[in-house]
Length: 159
Image 1 (cartoon, rainbow, N blue to C red):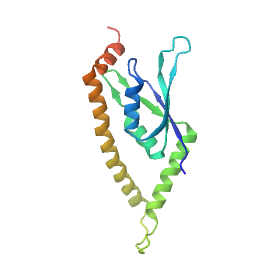
Image 2 (cartoon, one colour):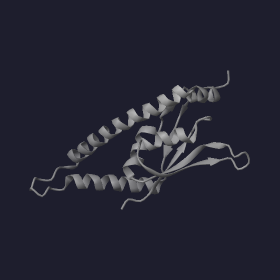
Image 3 (tube, rainbow, N blue to C red):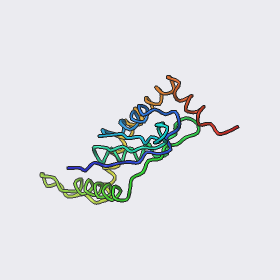
Image 4 (cartoon, rainbow, N blue to C red):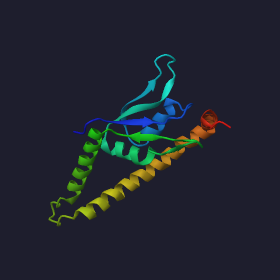
């Protein structure tokens, strides 16, 4: 049973809706919750929040694809996990490698670490490519709706 894993999502630009953030996050995998922090007094959303993903693979994909992801002309998202979650992700990755290395029932010999990592990376790359194209669709929708232009306007550096 996998444990829930929480990811910090920061540097969310002013004007970016929760729906847009959730749209990007869900392309990385299913999640239990998205909680954007609000200013106590104004109730306006702050530039960060937390996403609790259902699977470790989804967290790793979000970190690979959305950390540093450019939103408009002036902003890049920041995604990170705490040290406890990172240790869990490292352990999960190692368990995946170990599972790939096991000999099969037919008696084929086990494979080495490098080959197992290569096989896992190939699988991740294929899944990432699919997610990237879905993320591009989300961004295309933001472009068409005018939300991306508004984000750029709100976050432009002072002239």
